[in-house]
Each structure stands twice: as C-alpha cells, then as structure tokens.
Amino acid sequence: MKRIAAVITEWRRLSHADVILDRICEPSAWGHKRPFEMKLVSMYVDHFPQKDMARDKARQHGVSLHDTIAGALSAGGKSIDIDGVLVIGEHGPAANNGKDQQMYPRRRFLDEVAEAFRKFGKIVPVFTDKHFSYEPLFSQWILQTYRHMGIPLMAGSSLPVGWRHPSTAWPVGEPIKRAWAQGYGGLDAYGFHTLETLQCQVERRRGGETGVVAVRSLGDGEAAWNHPDLPRDLRERFAATYEGRPQQRKPPGGRNGDVLWEIRYADGLIAHVGMFSSEGSIWGFAGEDSQGTIRPIVFELEEGNPYGYGHFGYLTRAIEHLVTTGKSPYPAERTYITTGVLAALLQSRSEGGRLVPTQFLAGTKYEPVDWPFATGVLGTPA
Image (tube, rainbow, N blue to C red; front, top):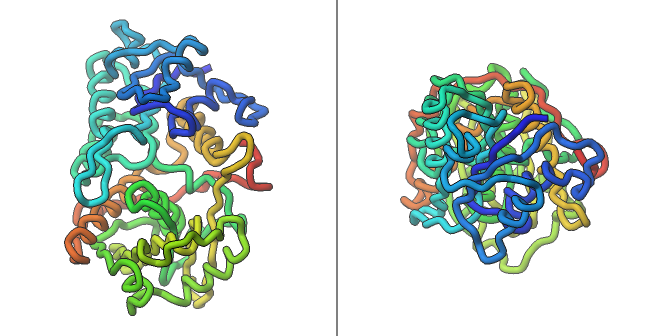
C-alpha cells in the first residue's frame, strides 16, 4: 500500500478533494469493488470553509494535518515519508484577475513540494489537479523545474478518462483537417475541461503534438453563433450525436453566455471551441479526417446517482498508476498546452478578441498514449 500526502485548498462535500481523496479512504462508499493501492496519511489544507470535512476525515482515517506543505510531505519529521503527492488546488477563496481566471495557489503548492524534495533529498511522483496555473510563465516554470529535477508528474482533469458516445478515440496517426470541441459553464473552470477534451483527441493526429502558435476569442453570444469562422458542419454533426442524450437539457437564458474560440497549431491545424452553455451540459469533440468524414464523440460524466462523479474514479486509477509505477499514464505536456491556451484565450477575450501569439507553446512536442477511458454503462465504477 503506497502512502500519499495531499496538498489541497479545501475539503468540502463534492469538492475535488472529496471526490478524489474520499474514494481513496472509503472506496466502497463510492461503489468501488477494488480498493486503491494508496493510503492517505498526511495533509496540508490551505482553507477550512464553514462546511469543512478535512478535520473530520483526518480524525476518522488517522490522517495527520500539518501547517506547512513540507510538514505534510515529511509527516512533521526530517525526511520524505510518503510515496506520492496529490496536489488539488481547486475550490476555496481565490481572487479573480479580471480575465475570468481564479488565482488558485497551484504554483505555490507545486513550488513548495519541489522545495521540500530539494530540502530532504528525495523525490516521489506528483499529481496536480486540472491547470498548472492561471499564469503561463508559472506553468512553464513548473514543467521545466519538475522535468529538470526528474519528478514524475501527472496533471489534468477527469474529462479524458470519462465515458464516451460512441466509445472510441481518434485513431493514432490519422490526419485531422479541422477540429471542433464543445463545452459549457464557466470559462476558466469548465473551459479547461473543454480544452482537455479537444487536446486528448487532436494530440493523436498524424505527427503527434507540435504545439500552439496563436489563439483568439471570436465573440460572445449571438456574435459567436453568427461568426463566419464557426465550423457549422462540424458543430451540427456533433449536435446530431448528442441529440436526446441526458446532458441535452437546454437551460433558460438563451445564447448570451456562449463564447467561440480559435486555436492555431504549429502544424497548421485550426481548431474551434464553442463554450455553448445554451446547448446544455455537453462536452465533446468532432474532427474531419483526410477523406472529409466528420467523426463526433460526446464525452459523458456521471452525476446524480447515489455515488456520483464516477469519472473521478477513473482519474484516481490513473493517479494510482502514477504512484505505484513512478510513471505518468499520459504526458504532462497535454496539460501544459491546455493551461497555456486557456490563459491566452481569456487574455484575448479581455482585449476584444486580439490574436494572441503563444510562442511559449509553439515548440511543445509529445506523442500520445493509449490510456483507457471509462467504458460500459455510464456510472460503472472504476
């Protein structure tokens, strides 16, 4: 059983800390028949909200709480006493920088984890949830520092490991002429999910990933839907795939909150992303292959049953692989790209749709891997 430390912003009901850490502590309560080969032994908690669960969970499961990140990694001692670190910097109080980005302390968390490794002379695998940071230069620092130190690093969200309809992926090595991704919700928190939905497919195109050279925000509301660059055939083919699915619950309010984005890749691929909340709780991808055939995939998450959030179970299995083998199940460069692209898109939107160059992403190359995603009936536990 691998001993892990958690560095989190807060733990409350159905927060990311809850749906990841609690299923490690109590797998059967979340429907898992096979426990995880990890034991939570120590935590650093940045914030204790009114409905805090961290203190009660710590007492219940014998987890030590620490005032510093170094203390959590060393169990208050003088050496690293764990086999892995889970950084969950989602939720909790954080300032908004005026570009719809929440300034969560992920960079500080990862900085202090690396510094503890230097201090104690030992490294262990690290998982960090969702973005690297709201600031692209911080993200660049994180990736380069962890690579330089040889720290096994896994990052990202649960979307790439969730259920799909149809249950498939873009064939590795198959060209992609054009790409579309659709999502909904807040542009920072859920825009990241949508970009990971896009990236986990386009990275599989012929030649592998080559980086992103520029992005721009094309418009909000009706301007997004009427923009001449909206790939209507891709979007409509994708819409026909999710028609009648459970997520297609169109909320009131119309298209006022919808946003259209454009991403230009170094190899010439142009992808468009519609944050189209007016279409319902939809995530997914559509690509056009070299023969002109459009292939759509709806990404589905589990919500609303007694366990719920089963996609996080599949993410936790991937974290388990990281901690038990010392190898990330998929490249952290994927999340480096999605982090940087999101920050640049929100900058573009805040500046009226200016084309924003992304030189820091232009040379980011990596090969995709075939890590399994959830299959079977929606909600089947990992």
